Length: 191
Image (cartoon, helix red, strand yellow):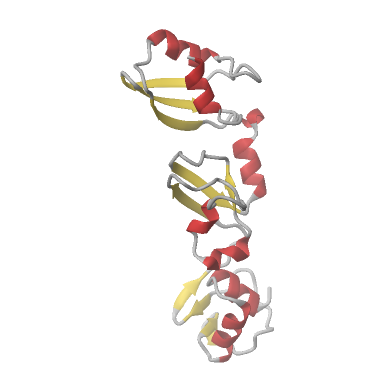
């Protein structure tokens, strides 16, 4: 990989910023200062910027605590998206949310540019559990919890079996392995 691209990606710089850093002698490769922006470096080269090691990664993973009021999308004409929460330097990575949280829902959301990982986490055939904490308007009964665990009719389908754990009389932790539109809200409403 060319040094200017490596530095740009590894240090979250624009390409012109990385070129300036290289030409000004701020970059060392395997112990020696390199000022040639077009030099190709080995995959295992030790690259330092201002004496601090920088590393290149093809994929980026960001753990985000999504607040209420943001859409789990890459773009939206009416609402702010989770990408609006990131510094503009991340725009180069073409990140997207792995899964969805409703606009009024808050919690963990993974942002990445790793499509294979996203597929493996979201595909219902992979049976990867996603856990949600629900605070309900009314107390939930043991019978309603069993219904959630067996699968409930949410209109378009009967959900796959889920794991429901009581936290208090009106709070549960619900783990599902699929992701239908508004599934958690629809499951709670169904019982």
